[in-house]
Length: 370
Image 1: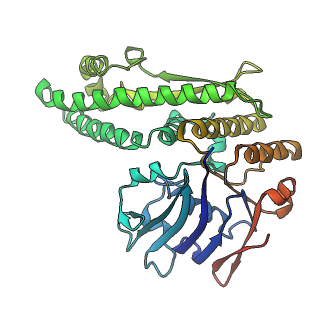
Image 2 (image 1 turned 180 degrees about the horizontal axis):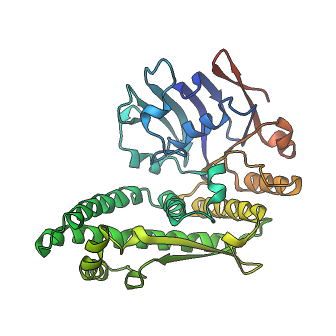
């Protein structure tokens, strides 16, 4: 199997880092240091080497280092499927992020043809007990890892829906105003559903085919509106949207469609819904899905993705931490992992590179220590 890894990473005026440079060799990267030193900022920089807004969903302005605010830049040398690429992404003065691949301007979607990146961050620990929006975002990120154009399809759908919602709030009743927007929503919405359904199928298959120390999750895709339970066909979704206009007008928003979907998960061995599991079990289920996503990508894309695991040791005992490191190593993935202490990664031994992040003189200092 081919490899996907960063061989160098350079940050300039990015978050807390005035300048940071790492030379990497494809092994997992254990990043340790005190809270607030800037460990997660390194992971965020890697996350924006893939399509989308990164692991914090931050704006370009939010990523710029203060107080200089001169703009930021992230540069990486990436080996993907046997080919070397140079990726640069940057912003000046809070302007929209720009991207260059191998010296040529490129759209963000083009990053997905080179770098597939998955992440697990502490804010996701509440995924199963909070609202459906976070679970949709989690599912769409997994879907985007398999189909880089999925993000553009979602944007097309959401833009048309915003226009339709404006008509609804203005109490516009003329059907002609809705037709073109609903066709756009139906075409994009049906594709969104197909993409999500394929992603779930790949995740479940990857779970079924692997022996792992982490629990298997039975996954389902549900919708708040039964009339649109399976909108594989654009025609069915268009009819559902048209039929729902009176209710939607009363509500002032669109009540049917893939934006109402939810991701369900059951801890298979116990037949318990994820939302009813313990905190440790919920964390283990999340890790299981990230690992399943990585295994499925290795087969679908041809190389395991880069993994970003922020404070991954939280809620994991020593045995399960060691099992996680074994699975990452067996997968052959370059995983960037953070923790406050180096000894959290002792079970990795020489299988990893070690990077220490400290804070000095109002800036972060990053250095490889092994």
